[in-house]
Image 1 (spheres, rainbow over the protein chains, first blue to last red):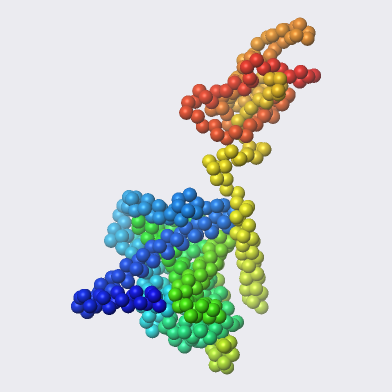
Image 2: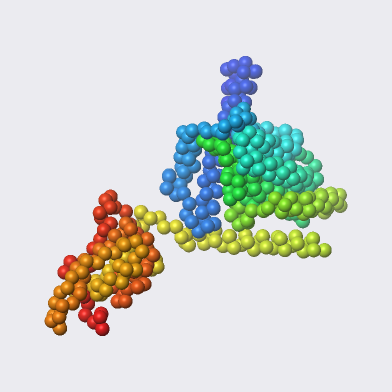
Amino acid sequence: MILLSITENIHNWLFSVMPAGVASIVEMVLIAIVYLTVFAVAGLFLVLLERRVAAWFQLRIGPNRVGFQGLLQTMADAIKLLTKELTGTDRADKFLYNLAPYFVIISALMALAVIPFSKDFHAFDINIGLFFLIAISSIGVIGILLGGWSSNNKFAIIGAMRSGVQTISYELSVGLSLLTMVVITGTLQLSEIIEIQKSGWLIVQGHIPAIIAFMVFMISGTAETNRAPFDMVEAESELGAGFHTEYSGMKFAYFFLAEFINMFIIAAIAATVFFGGWLSPFGITESIPELGVFWFLIKTMVLVFLMMWFRWTFPRLRVDQLLTLEWKYLLPINLVNIVLMAVLVWLNLTIRW
Amino acid sequence: MSYFSDIYKGIKTLLTGMSVTGKYFITSKKGAITQQYPDNRDTLKMFDRFRGEVIMPHNEENEHRCTGCQKCEIACPNGTIEIIWDRGIDEETGKKKKKIDQFVYHLSMCTMCGLCIDVCPTDAIEWGQNFENSVYDRTALTRVLNKPDSKLMKGVED
């Protein structure tokens, strides 16, 4: 409520001091700045979290020198990257080479805009929210393809092509597993999906098919973000650094941050669609709507941790194994699962209270 | 029907793997193997098999076990060890006898192969666990291992 009143006050004040057209543009710019800040802070925090979690999985300690428990480590790294030289290769396609990081980062930012952080902290609540997310999350791969193609490097092009194969395949599973849940909700709008979950999170409402859909979503979501065990795009032991071999300085940092933001987005979608987004478990804090952000972040962080757990446990797949997993296992399971869910909804076998 | 059993086996093995790493994650707080070096400098103890440098232990009466046989000098592939020896008169027998004057050890040339320690018949030299071997001047890396006025321990040659 406090948050809502702050934004409302700013809104009223802006419209009172300047004409409506200018005020709305200023408002948009302000929101964009807020989201850019969220983006940067979340990205830096996730990089640090990944490094610490990886260290704990490997019985190490991880960065703990810069700031309390290493909290400023990634900030220092970002500042270092800002000061570094932006190198490039000979005969690279300079225009596309420079464009590629922005493709990746802008698509990540656009996806962030439709995610409901809480009831009031939701920048862009469109009625095709889920569809928009699926569409946007696969635009990022264009940036990867451009980056790999334009940097005139064999490792980069192989990495980029692998990324293309992988994303095109796994997009299907991401979309279909989310559609399974849309069968229950009957809407694509994210705020309405959360409203429906007030009578039980969707993973409870849809029980067996919802759990299958969740598992498929987490597997294919990990593949969509090009993280291990699906990190053939930048397989260090095979391809140098993959598609961003030739990038340095801040352009590399954009790719790096976008990867972590994409992981956050996949976890946030899973939290929203399967675990009730900003809703508290069993409605225990329903009277305090400010805690919505807290619950949302808790759920998202648990899922992010799950993805990190995947990364530091499983070995990398081969390309043929990757495609076998998608086309022979995940896709048929998913299609059967949709039918199962449809039957469940038709016969009213979902669990609600 | 191997399709469904494959799926079952796949999920089962993945969960097994995750439980292994999960256990590591939970116990990582107390089981971390990282040494936070400059902080724990006072308490840090290297493991027994660590090869830091060659040392020659002396007992309380300033006696070592080196007879000056020069086997280590011959065994060393790099010429790391130089034994400067002398003939002194033995108190017991009154005869002239070989004894070491200076056991010179060039740490800068040593590759820590351990051949000298293997070959030593009297176990006069052994591995030290010191690892802080960097110095500002390389002359500091040439060391005399036997202490001044030290002499041969009794009974080593029997």
